[in-house]
Image 1 (cartoon, rainbow, N blue to C red):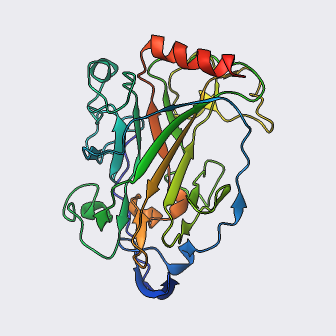
Image 2 (cartoon, rainbow, N blue to C red):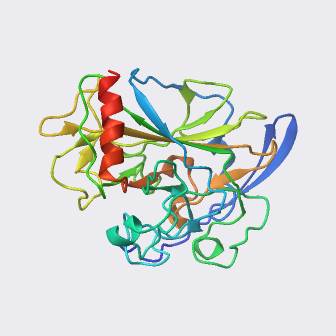
Length: 311
């Protein structure tokens, strides 16, 4: 999918927020901080997840700073096809030109030879100048500010609460969340989940003001596979989300449920925002994540075996 150059929607907002006892001036524009109503102190939604066995794979927190404005899942072969910058853990070679063969031959930041690639939009402090102020994915696409390094990244695979799971096929591609949530009027693909480390079990779709606590971004991926395809035209219909209670819809089969949780220590009093398409105005609801499974088959079999034996 190739995106046409978007029309900039300049929305000038000047507001003052009180964060951790200090005043923060937010100049909300399409290229700066979002408007003040996108930041909240209260996490208004309760997270309910079934208790299932899980496997955590350590992949680091992108200490080597693997960043690019590509999107191998949605825009393969198109440099800067994301129009915003992504942060990666796992496969060290992932970019627009990657193929299944090149991913299989690469090295990884993950343990257990997990060559999979996990990625999401960067988070920036919007009151400063970033390294890419005049580059694609950064300032040239309306995303300004200093890129924040994650404090932590957790990669977790959960089992099904109602049945055994099947192995994910190698080179399965997944997306969660809607990078166009704002212009899609926050439709059904919106799955942004922001939280604070001192408020477990609660989240919001807006930017949380966590004070001195760690700010969390969580991504839950679909876990009901059609049994045939590793991708689809929408990058969504081949793997869908379970029904209430955890049962998969008809003609789909349960596979391990991937969760990625990214933590940041944001300096109190500083405005921040994720990268987005320019017309999405860096809305927090546009948060999204992508994944390509490049685990060796033996490792996937071991992971699935653990999830099923522990049920």
